[in-house]
Image 1: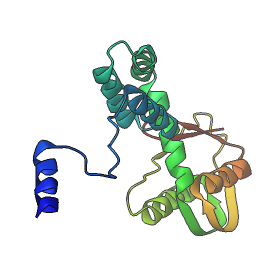
Image 2: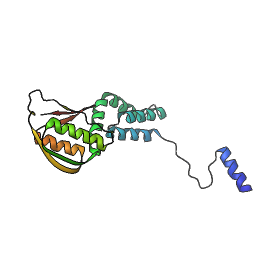
Image 3: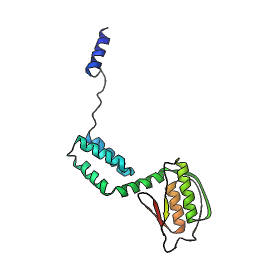
Image 4: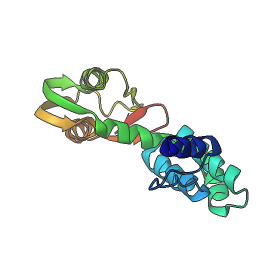
Length: 174
C-alpha cells in the first residue's frame, strides 16, 4: 500500500522515480550540430529549422546565426550538394547500354533512378551543348550494382562530358 502511494505521489508531483535517469533538456548546441549535418546532407529545410531552433534556445548563438545567414545565401549550392548525395544513395542493379546516344542513355538512367528510389529521387538531366560537341556520341556500358552517380560518371567519361549539379537538375556539358 505504501509503495503504491509513493508511486502515485511521484507521478502526480512529477518527481523522478528511484533509479530513473532524468531526460536532459535539449540545448542549442544539439540543434546547431543537427543543422550542420543537414547542410552536409544538402537538406536546406532541415538545416534552417535546426539553426532557428538553436537560436530560439539561445538568441546569442553566434555560430547558428552565421550558419543561418550562410544557408540563406547559399541555399542553391547546398540543395545541389543534396541532389548529388541522393544520386549516390540510389543503387542501380544493372545497366546495359550498347551504342546508345547520350540523351537516350541519360533518359534511361533517369528512369532507373526513379524506379530504384521508388520515386523519391529524380535526376532531371539537362544537356547543354550549343556547339553540338556531344551529338552522335555513343555510350556502351555493362555494369551491375553501382550507385547512380558512378553510372553517370562512366556515361559522361565515355562521351567526354561533365556534370554540374544544380538545385533542380543535373546539367551535362562537353
